[in-house]
Image 1 (cartoon, rainbow, N blue to C red):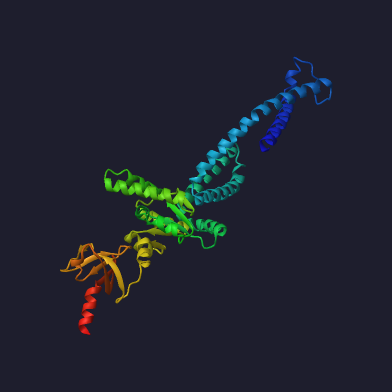
Image 2: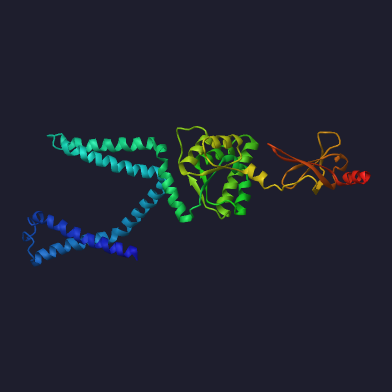
Length: 369
């Protein structure tokens, strides 16, 4: 329906253009064909104008669909290009254009009065002011981070006031546990994957080292799974910070720019974010926080799989990976036994549980009685 209306409007435009084109050519044509001068409504004039209007109307009727197609292709191309440009950059360019054009207009008024060169000098001056102003703002776009905060607040207003951007670090992507966290539904907001993080993953996936290559490919698979299978919005941040070389520093700058939180496993990045006031969601800390709390005196079932460092010790692991050191458990290697928790030690590497076989504990208790 819209195409039909546009085609009709194009045809009417062609009729009007044909009428004025043939009327402007009337003085030249009248030398060869008798056509009365002026806009007299004689049969000859009417026929002459009608021929022009019908000819151009037909031409525009035929080419309007092609023009609409070309225009749609241009819009699609422009839209694809603009999607890769951060919103903050677009806002700065528009802001710079408005300010510099206004300044150029004010300066051009007296310059126009300069004889001869004023007419040419004023547009050149305006163009230079626009170029310098826009370039100046883009080179200092990091100082205008408040604009991104305004856009982010607008986005949060549509999806929820508590919506926050979660920025994935390379280590968190390769780790893979982010997929399970997304499945639980505890992670809310928008997942943001920076273009420079994707580039780093691609380099890792193309590494000649087999281990690095497998880790990089697993990271790319994790991203595909989050984007296609998880019910959580994912956005790709195409912008970059050319003045910063390290990816971790770029992530910190990005978090400040869009007012987001970084999801990572990197201990050093965690500390840098704390120093710079950037919120961090550490997957390792989350894993330690959700481990079951075990108190001394509790009983549990453990499978002794190997001997410990000390004589007579056996080592078992819980389902969440927590190490259980069983005193006197060496003789139970390969068996599943009941153990009694004696103490719990929290270390930087995680939680460690010390226990002893319940059978031995019962024997000691019986002897005391």
